[in-house]
Image (cartoon, rainbow, N blue to C red; front, side, top):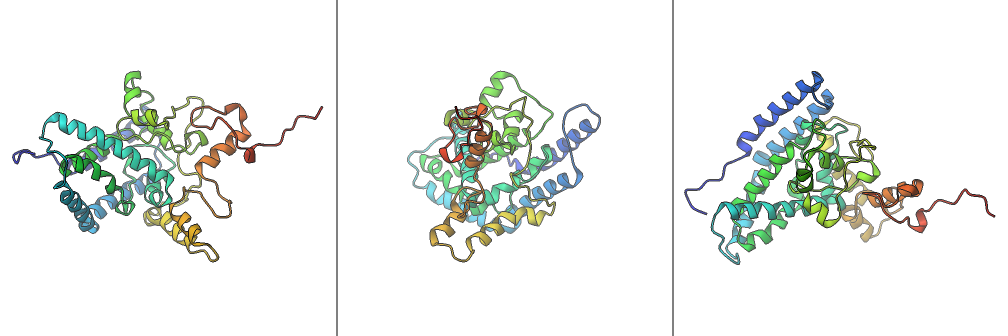
Length: 329
């Protein structure tokens, strides 16, 4: 990358833009000009979580992030090829980084240790621009930076990857709104949109674990995780079991504490303790909770006419099938 070329620091101007658009959305909602809903305590919690994300990222955990970033710079010396800086090279880096975001995001939904960080973003029962700021404070614990290593080895400079990730996050802020119902069809087909991301924040069975996209929804379409927003089924936001608190400390730590409590239960095998950390969220050794997959199967067992609908399994496992109520002949 040329020494005289400097990628802009998006984070330096993003915060005032975020606050300005949150205020604008709130004003327009109160004036009944656009759709949406704000709840004061919820929005305050989301904004506080965003501030905590900034504080942990730039002050408290800055040394950790610098160390992880330094690892990428060290690995960069072993790159396979030298990729000269061009706008097309940066665009390719952005696209590939968006693909890595998709897989990182998906893994955080199916591995409980990753979910302990990401669950924070899903903990609001409202969906507006302030929800976008409800970010995890301990994201460095997920180890997701490892997914950037292939890009670095391929020859993309770590600074390009960091810029791509920040631009990706900046874009995602604007999909957290109910004001925009649908974008033009061509845009909905290629990009993540408010409609697609509302689905991702839904706790309806059909909407669980869908639409992991950052910027490009094509990854969900390609890997079979795309679920369209159904106009006949309103999205219910939040968690399958909502945490019922506006305390930022509890929001930031509740799932980590639950993991430690579960893994420390007496009488468990070593593998069961590991499963409480790395199995899908909802897994329990006694089967008293349900994972997202099991929630979907249970829903289809109660509504067999919806089997195979987007986001729902096409077949009901034998163990989930309900006994027939029709009289025997």
